[in-house]
Image (tube, rainbow, N blue to C red; front, side):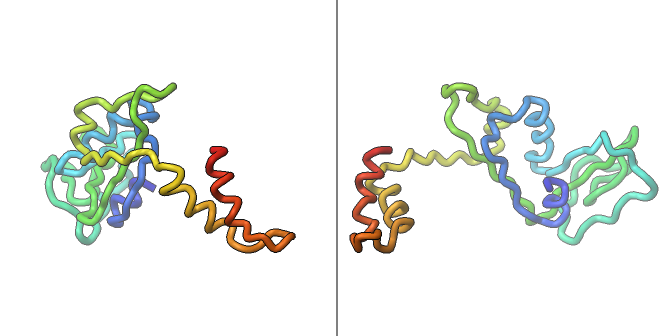
Length: 154
């Protein structure tokens, strides 16, 4: 899905990115650079280089193989350059919880951070529960009246 989105200008969401293996996160560094490339070293190049997709960003390592969209790289493999419309988003919970850790400063600096506070029960959860319980119970009482009790229990 990542390579397809890169080639076609799609969007990718990396949910709980801080839980990924270090090796996976390290591979993202070149993709998040301004050149927006990733080398598929595990995939031997078969035959001629793939043509660049429409809207692919130019740039990156030139010379043998080039990087305009996709091409062979020295030693085999394929280097893919992200389409101009490609976007990558990541979510994570703050480090410190069990099993959670912070991203490295190098990777963290490649993202724009947006802090989202925890939702409050009354402000955010109550309307969701009330909407889910719309309708009447068997005795004709609106089920939404039960929403505050359910949210309190959370």
